[in-house]
Every structure is written in structure tokens, then in C-alpha cells.
Length: 267
Ligand code: NI
Image (tube, rainbow, N blue to C red):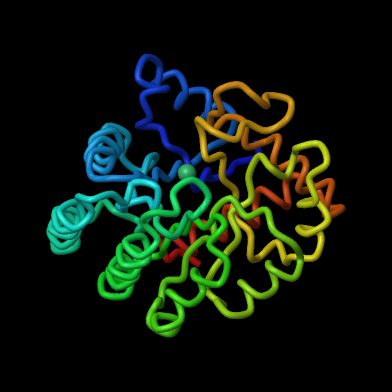
């Protein structure tokens, strides 16, 4: 059977509260061997951690403050999260596999740009200090993202993911060339009608791609508009295989290897 890793699913989301065990069972039936869970604030970090502890070796939490959740209390949230991260780092069985999802988003909220950059920089510093990969969210942030990352460029030993990538070939090349340890997270957008992403992924080495649903959001065609879940990753695998002219099995095998290498250091 074809197996895969969903590197980005918000399984702690309220949308999954009533049937998360069924969602996870369907994912495993579809071939999921691991699901990585990026929170967006302190509350969801606690919720994600508790959920993942119920499914050890299958679900793995990240820790982070999402740019859209950077509000007036961001200092306090970051402080508590860093205490959690430091304690986890010292424990015999660390749970957090990445810092995420973090980054910049100027699409909805332009009033906290400075605070977003400040929060992102703090979390880049965590990734460097605790030697964790990053799960990066970027929307309408232009050059600010790369500007924030520049001072850390050589200190982010574990690399990370540019999540929900949907840009051009030029942008992809720029990101991947500047950040040799980073991958592009490819999800449902790839399957959308009129998406340019199939053209872009054709030119990106499969060795630089990881798969993600971003569930409950971004459901791929033909599930578009519904609640997304990790069991839908095969729609993305099939579209990626079609775009690159290779087999779905090859897409699944290489992207799984990429995710194991990036998040678990397994080569
Ligand atoms: Ni997300």
C-alpha cells in the first residue's frame, strides 16, 4: 500500500471535536503513517499536545504562535510557550517536532506588522536554539519574510517548510536556493482548477517537496468546499504525479522520505 505523511493538519480544531478518532482511522486506512499538527496559539498548542499524546508515534505536535494570532498579548503567550518548549527539550521524550506555524500574514491584519515581525523573530530564535525545523506561513508579506529570516539563515540547522506554497517558479527557486534545508509544502491548491501550481511543481525537484492538507481548510478537488482531512492526501499525490509525469508511488515514497528526514532526522 502507498503510505504518506501529512505534514500539516490542524486536528485539534473544533471542527474535529466530535469525530477526531474516526478522522484519524480514515487517515490510517488511506495510508497515513504520521500526521504533524501545527498549533496557532497557546491554547491550541496545549490542545494539540494533549491530542498527540493519545496517538504516540502517529500524531506529533509543533509549537508556535501564528501571525494572525499575534495580538496585544503576544509577549505573554510567547513567554509561556517558550517555557513549555524549554521543558520539553530537557525531557527524556521530547514531543515538539517543529516550531510552527509561524511567519507573517499581512493579508487580513495590517495593524500588527511590527508585532508579527517581532514574534516571528523570537520564534526563529527558538528554532535555532532548540534545533527544531520551522513550519512557515507567509501571505502578502513580500520581502519582509526573507528579511526577518536573513539573520538566522545559517543558524536554522534543521531547515523547515514553506507551508501552503502556491507561488511562481521564480519564487520557488528563490526560496529553495536561499534556504537549502527548506522544503515547499504542497497541498490542495495543486488540485484547484486554474491553479498554476502544477506548472511550478513540474520544475521543483521532488526531493524538496513535502505533502500537507492544512485540514480542516483547503480541501482538494473533488472535496473542495468541504471539511478537509488527512485521508485526502492521495488526491494531492495523484495530481503531483500527473504534473511531474511519474507514478503516485514514487511521489508518496520520496515525499515520505523527505518528511522523515526533515522532522525526525531519519535518513
Ligand atoms: Ni495551517
